[in-house]
Length: 256
Image (tube, rainbow, N blue to C red; front, side, top):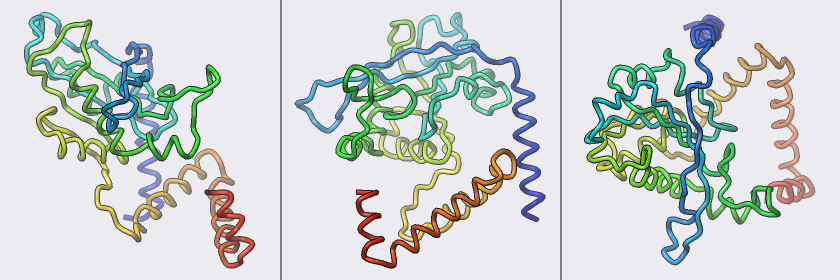
């Protein structure tokens, strides 16, 4: 397919979603789940508040009055700045359509260290984003355990479910979490829609660079004309700095 034609189709599809989804705000309630800080330290009892949003618009309370085998659609938050309630509210999205069809509960769980979900707070209000903290607690392994712990212990209106049917949704990085969760804990969920999930680790992952180049270029064309050019110039400077001792020392200090 011609790249310009593909870009136009992608842009038109986004505009159609935005138009078709208008007026669906404020359908979700927001709350916090008491999450474990370090899932791999059995001696630690430290917890933190993980944000989630819930949409029970389609949840048939009469049908699920006994809370036996209810369907729950869980969208996994990824590396985006914050979770957005529109994801679980707009009926044009597949997971919302599925929830509506099956009278399911819709939940969106925010990823640790993103949005308002900061495991460690210092000085009363500031999140600890230091490198040692991120190395220990911002890992795929911790995120997968967050997900498993949430599924095992979440209660809707303080009622414990019997044989709930959890269905995972995720895209890109959260799609990877979706797939890895299904592989590691197949007993916790009945299925998952793990879209665009990069689960094959490789040293020269050039395909990701191609996707990012297209995304940044397309984004620049729509809103910020200088964005793609700035990114290109930045990588050129990084490459030039890597050729000299002084440049490498500077990079080491910047990214240590």
